[in-house]
Length: 187
Image 1 (cartoon, rainbow, N blue to C red):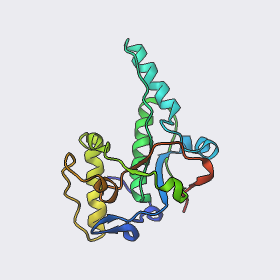
Image 2 (cartoon, rainbow, N blue to C red):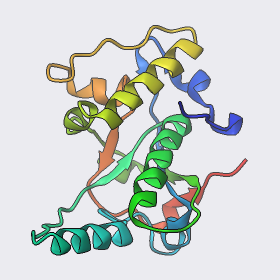
Image 3 (cartoon, helix red, strand yellow):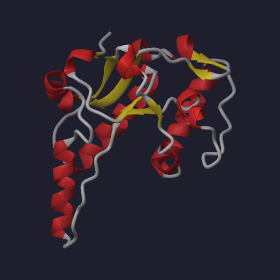
């Protein structure tokens, strides 16, 4: 289970029976290996070039082709949830890329014109059916329970769009996010 640092445990301020409150500050969890690039270039859709290149090489080695897809920038309204995804990123990168990496969180403070373009990530339904998604749902249940609330009981295939945002804390932005909107979260 994820051991979230105390300074990132913000669910007590955000979580109600209706789910996580939203505002114009969003969080993105990633690897420390990507932090300098993000601070200079912003958050790029499908931005982990090293991991994408490693996947291409692996597929070429086994004789298959790899078609790279453009994914949006994944966001959440909670630092605590972003930390879970940052740990997943570090774990996924460690399989293909050598080095010592740590989970880091970026805050994206978006002006209203961009904030209105953040959407519930209903595409996450397929991810949540995998082991990684099961781990997230267990982590999320713990967050709810730690804050005196019942974990959401959601049928992923029939859930309302807004449940993915409000109850699961899963959102996306289908464009790059400029570095000027970003700040590395530190204690």
